[in-house]
Length: 165
Image 1 (tube, rainbow, N blue to C red):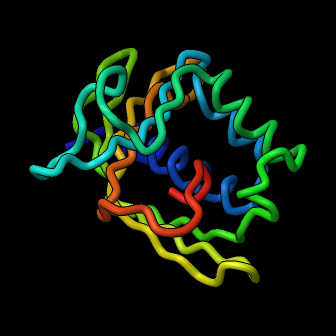
Image 2: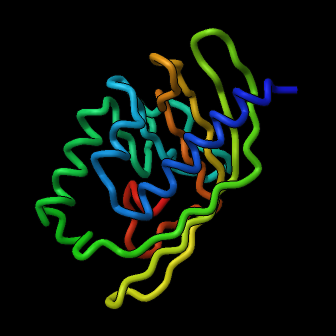
């Protein structure tokens, strides 16, 4: 069983990320990520399962380094992403948080999620799946070193971005 204090800190980080995405507080959201963070949505294989090597196989999203996330958010904030204008309202639901492993430096977690998105132009969309996080202890808190997002669906229909998964 996980240390209750660690479990509370993990839940706080994951729930905070969801809240910041829903509030479109991009700078605060970026602050949750380590400089070398990886944000990865693997594609699904024709034979089932997910791609396993983001450098050599197809991905829905693969952003290596926080600088890549910053570039994505810059495009959102400056209206340079026509496909995301205006960004939809979202509600992220995160549940079933589990700590798989923990040591003095890193924590691996697993949880389920669902995101409901709505915009006047596109209506309502829903996505769901699971998250696998690698969290890193930095200073007195935790930050996201890797976020792997496994979609339940295998075909992307409609808009799709870092804030809709």
